[in-house]
Length: 541
Image 1 (spheres, rainbow, N blue to C red):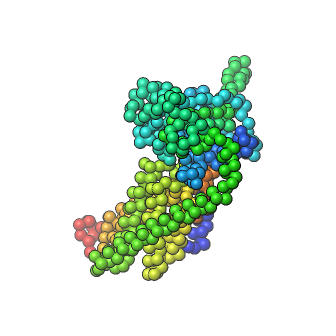
Image 2: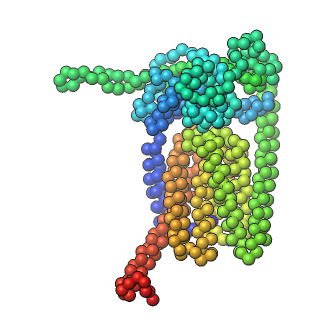
Image 3: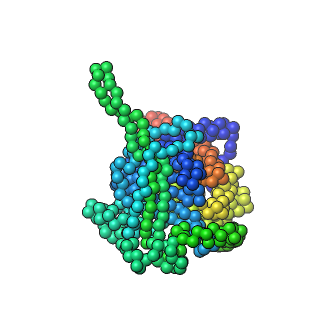
């Protein structure tokens, strides 16, 4: 509830500051985008990112069937992580997508160091790259499962990478022995039924029963990545030779994973009767689309019911406060509701971003998790309530009403698409983290304590927190959102609109800070003149 008016100077300042922040944010990320041709002939875009501070390299691309492949090399822990987000078959009882994670040791000669990767630049973005060396297929038998809650001992990136997989995180027995020798807790790993027990477990492609345990296989290929550094030799004026880095060598490498699944239902891509599958698909394509649409409609209907329930809870809470605090104004009780929502939203979204995952700066555009959906539905109910209250009592200006409108539309769009929930929660966190201080400022004014040192502390903390979270962190989040290939165009447009609105608020906050500073200096000057006139500080008229 922060009303403001927009003027022409504000718009000019907003435009210049937005351009400045985006220029600064560009220098915070290092990435390379290359176009590569997949084995099926399709052309896709690979996004390679290097973080020299964390000493990691990530590679991500989308396959022709829509599967999203992500590879992370953690040089500090000598760990490599493969993640596959495979589109599910809803008509066969699967979720919208299925996540797999495979973890193994990283050999130093597999990929170039992160420092070298960070210096690579793309000269011809439209060129289709072909790897100079096509390395052989590596067979990996994944005989152990990894506990996600304790996987941080192997690598801090596993939690964010594999949070969607949870029960489908696998590694090799040889790697387990290596990590145990290094002192890693054995409770991280769970030994799976031996993949060599052919008499007990068949391959999934030869198993007919969907609920029968079997041995699943999954293959992927990194079509293009910098695997080696090239060195050239030069001579100085004295004739002494020296080597220097003069380029990279690109490679392509395939991986074939074999692992145990408790039921074939979790390995439907490993089909044996391809003729049956193709015929079944062609005959039921229209039915699949209808089933998917029906499933999506039922899900949205349930979300509408839950959102209305949350709205009724916020309205009931407001009326209860009005009954208990009968001597207080309606705005007093409404701001209490706003304060409670701000604290609740910050706590939930902080847990989502920092604990439950995924990390919004690295994995925007991912599918919504149940916790993300819950947080957004609770906030949706509040924003509808507060929007109606502000319109009825006419307490807020167009900027705050625009903020509430964009928040409601953004949450609805995120829930409808079923993705980008992590960005929505990040925006909620950044928007609501300053809310308790804003409400505290209003309550101090109403109780006559705003002119004390406590009011000054609240103002300073509010301005600092707003600048850091809404401007700098928000600018970095927006940049990572815009450069990522996963989020949809409408989601990116919503992010730009919310960030522009933050700058509108920022212009008014800067003006407020200038006025506050001038008043403070005037009070100090008047106080000093009074002290000088009276001759000591102890006596004042």
